[in-house]
Image 1 (cartoon, rainbow, N blue to C red):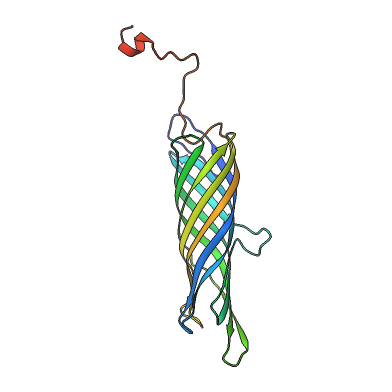
Image 2 (tube, one colour):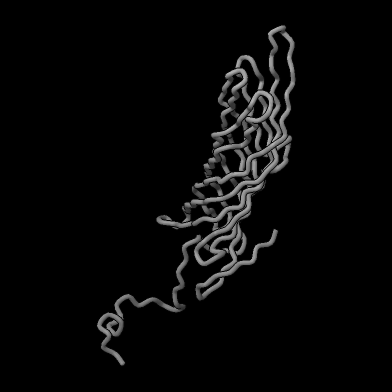
Amino acid sequence: MVFLLISFSQTVIAVTDVSLHSGNATGKYSESTDSQSKELSGSDTSLSIRNLNTFSFVDVGLDLGVLLKSPAGLELSGDTGTHDVNFLSNYANLTAGFSFSLYPSWIEYYLDLGYRVGIGKLEVLRTESGGGVKNYTFNSYTNDLIYKYGIKFVILRNLLLGINYETKNTLMDKKSDVLNPKVDSSNSMTLSIGYRFGATHAVSTSKTPDGRKNYYDPCQLFKACN
């Protein structure tokens, strides 16, 4: 996917971060039919593309819950004691946010607000009173806002290592269906590795005139020269 980079500053700088995220994820399963609930845990893997300073100082990005060795980008599971619960999802996050660097300049921070669309599958193995097991499958997904923030370490100007946190409220809500299941309170913490294209230094930059610096130029200090 190609982004059109627009900047309202004097210099247009096309800087794109591409990184792979992988780590742990949690969620909560609940239902009203059998009054079951369970904290789910699993993994979250995504590919992130982020353009810095796309609109003035605002970054835009795309995160894809990708298929690697696993069936889905997001996988959650748990055992309520009566039910075995498995949730799978592939998704796309559209994000906008800010990146900034304080000190030292090779440590960067970001804060994003985004919207997630996806596809999801919930499988519930329910133990019946007679001892048998019945399988329930729900194919649905709830599109919703997501929040992200994290820290990046810029190594040798282009290599990126990061720690990332993301939260989303509802993943699936089938209250009108059998079992009335719901999966929500989804959070993930991932580590990332990536590469920065089109940059020679960190996000926050300033242009310094060429030539030897003169910190004690009396003309500049006292404005006494024509």
